Image (cartoon, rainbow, N blue to C red; front, top):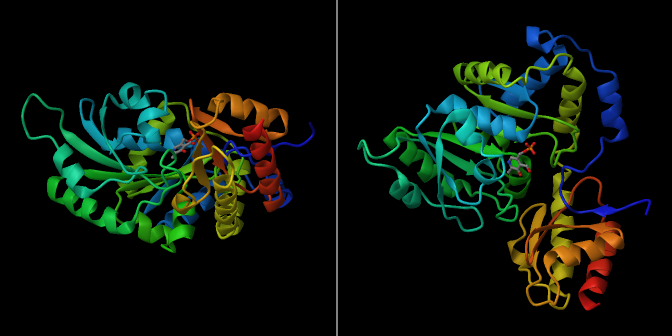
Length: 345
Ligand SMILES: Cc1ncc(COP(=O)(O)O)c(C=O)c1O
C-alpha cells in the first residue's frame, strides 16, 4: 500500500516543502550558550503571541508539561487535574518521578470541569493532607474529544485559585485549535494562567518541538530543569525554524481540519452500528463507539488498516480519529467508505 489515510493522530504529519526550506535555511548557533538566533526568535515570538514575559523551546509536550509542574511545585504537593488528562495518564508517571507530586484527578464532562469541583478538591490545612498547589487545565482536551475549555469556566477557576493561593498551568498542546474554534486569541486564553505549554508538532505540522511560556522567573526555573533532564539542545534552530514557519502559516488553516472532522463525524453517524454525536465535535479530534458491532475496536482498526485507513483504538469499543494537514477532504470520503465496508463485513 503506497499511501495510507492516517487518522491516528495529528502528530503523523510530515513537514511541507516550504517548512523544509525554512529549516534548511535556518541561521543556527549553540542554544545551550543561548546563541541560536532562530531559537531566540521563536521564543520571543511565542512569548509575544501568548502575552507572557518569556518562553522556552523544549523537545516535547510531555517535557513542557512536566517541567512546568516541577517549576510550580515542591515534592509532596498535590496537583488538581481532570481525571482523563494527558499530564496525569499518558506521560509515564513523570509527575511522581520528576516532581515527587501526586495528582488528584477530578471528573470532567469531556474533560471540562467547574470551579466548584476545584473548590471541593482543595485540601484543608492539616498534616494529614498534601498541600494543594497547582490546577492543570487541558485545552483542547484530547480524551475529551478535542473539547474546548470555555473561557467562562476558566475565569471562576482562576478567581478561586488566586483566593486560595494556587497556581494554574494550561496544557495547551492544541491551544491553537481551541483559539481557532472559539475565536479567542492565544494571549487572551493564556492570560489567566501562570504558565502554558503549547506544541508545534501536533496540529501545526512541525517535526519536533513544544514551548513553555510564563514569567521571566518561572521560565528561568524551567530552563534549569530542562538542563537537568538533558533537554538542552545545540543547533536547535533547524527545528525552531519549522516552529516559526508553522506559527506564521499553519494556525489559520486549522479551521479546515475542524471542517474535515465534522464531515467525518457526520458520515460516521450514518454508518450502521457506529455511535457518535457529531454535535460534540468542536475541533480536529473525534471518538466513535463500536459496542453495537460484533467486532472490537482493535478488530475494526486492523481491518481498516488492511484497506489503507489507519485509526487509533483507545479502548475495547472506542476509536479515535484526528484530522490534520496531511489528510484531505477526499481522504475523509475514502476513510468513510472503508469504515462503512468494515462495519458491514
Ligand atoms: C493534550 C496533550 N498534552 C501533551 C501531550 C504530549 O506531547 P508529546 O507527545 O509531544 O510529549 C499530548 C500528546 O499527544 C497531548 O495530546
